[in-house]
Image 1 (tube, rainbow, N blue to C red):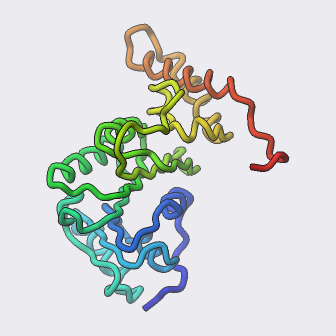
Image 2: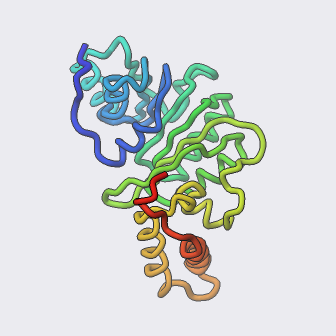
Image 3: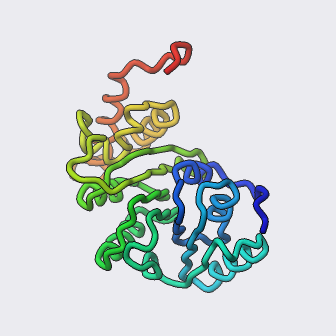
Length: 239
């Protein structure tokens, strides 16, 4: 059994890894199984399930798990999204490297089969608003958010099942919070500020009245106005 560190994860998957701790965790669309292998090696999970739909990535995952000698702790399953998971079987699930609408579809189909994990960690490759909107209506609260640098700026979100309205959104402009993240807006990091500024710059010449870009630009400007109304934290002050 190989519990020594494996290949380095990129910043995107490192951010995902930091938000996962569970006795049993399923990674959907894992490809080479890099994330679940590191979750086991670093003690973030005891056991894992790897789900792959396509034959090539499925074989990649099986070979990687076998080479690591972790076949007793990582179960590789063939299937679409959450279909290989039984209701109540796995308390924690991650989905990474897909579009937000694709992820939302996977989660909606799983919920229709009563597969509703206690915790979800998602990393979409595009606008995460559809996932935040889904969570608001599906009984999940946003517990943590990260931004990771890479080819794009990648959002990483952790949702947990909870009752009632999500307090994370209290006091924030709703559209901006769903697009850029309520916790990220409150953190007001330099990376988020650059992302919002870039969106305003990109969308301004495209935003003729009535075009979709006009709504996106209004959302970006709302986020920028909120950020500029805050005083940036003083690193010397601590906390």
